Length: 368
Length: 248
Image 1 (tube, rainbow over the protein chains, first blue to last red):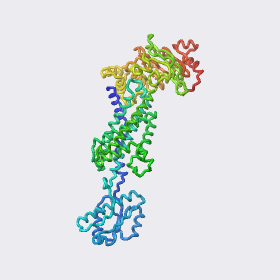
Image 2 (spheres, rainbow over the protein chains, first blue to last red):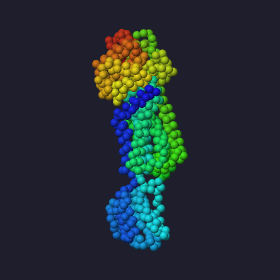
Image 3 (cartoon, chains in turn cyan, purple):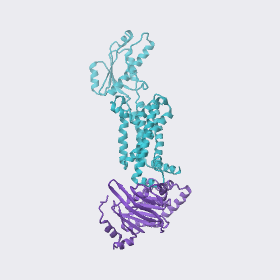
Image 4 (spheres, one colour):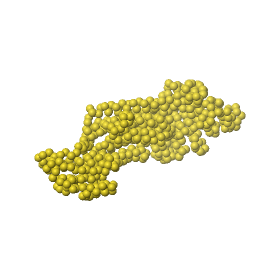
């Protein structure tokens, strides 16, 4: 046991004395969270829109006020002809035009239904659909206000509904994905590089000649990264809950349990990579290329898995972060308990055990 | 030097597919001896040494290290040997003290024993002012001496040195050999591979390996007589002339 602690202490020295390791360990998650949270968000703010108000009555004015008050839109100008609409789109700066027909208020009050036209620049379909749903939400909102005072029901004008994420916040989608990405990358990269480094410098031979158990070499190498990853996870959580308004509705215990599982999976993967290469560079390349792409593509936070062709969906099933992503979303956003995610936890556990066994076995063979 | 045999090999062989790296090598090494293991690059020196250290499993043949069988008692062997590779193998990002503590620690030395021995070692090596510096900042010669001292820090019966003096100047090499003699005087058996023929003269006995086979084994003086040579260099050329393998 004392030998083990000696070894673990040495590993911590390695980590804390290497600025590059520290930067990667703590800089990457912060950068990722900020990048994905702010810069690469699919939430849209301050889009330029144009209002074409033929009605110019109380109702249209109230809606325009609401649009003006919203953070999503920035009203560029108000126009009074359809020709100008096309001109506005052609500048490329206007993303959306809202047209109120004449007699808007009258129709609403007397016929109980009225039309608002929303025209979006669909050259960027994602932005367009997001913006139209923002706009219809605002109109719906106004409609609800009217309903309170109206005797007869008023027409329901849109069916866009967002559950769990009514404001279409980007963070809820990205934070769980970034968590999976960071934990996987950091752990796989760190363990594989740190083991291969010992091979490269020749110290691995010295360790294997010593009476110290080779399996313990591996375990003691993983210990610091295990704990540092948990610290990392806490950092990501604090950042995303305070800065990104990420909800945390479920149990922290469950979240940490699932994360610990993913960390173990990553450590096993790192070990596996370190067995198949002898240079730090190739270990780094395999970890980055081999982990980054599949994690980005098949976790589900960048591209919805449901829309992928079947073969790709099967591949996604073999990616540990996919299951972790489901667990994190269920726990953090929906606040679900272990009863709802036990299947995913079980799959993740199975993957971890499999990888651990394979990598330790492979390591033993290398000693022969 | 006594007649106690600490390394005994019997037809020790290692094959990699069709390639026979070491072919039925048989020799004895006596306690306290400085045993030189010579040969050109690719002659099979390192492979032989790796089998003796337990880093590599032999394909056939037997060997006993410090009386323990290399197949069945590798754990006991590990406690009784030290090893220093060509790369000096210390942690460059750890200080002198931390390196000593680490290697002493994984050999299971107690804190008291460790502290006492460490202070002595730092004193002997004259590293008092450098004790808290990172090993990476030390000159090569010092790293090498420190690596050797760390390899015998747990007082092994035998220490294996794999080309320990590669890349250092002749003066430092001479100083390094003083450390080897001191260890040998304390009764530690030295098993050293080298391709510097001047170093071969420092050994009590040397073997010459050519193409995986032991071609000669005797004291440097007797080998020179046998091949009517004046230096070990000439002996080496005489023996290695027939080598078929290219250096790797």
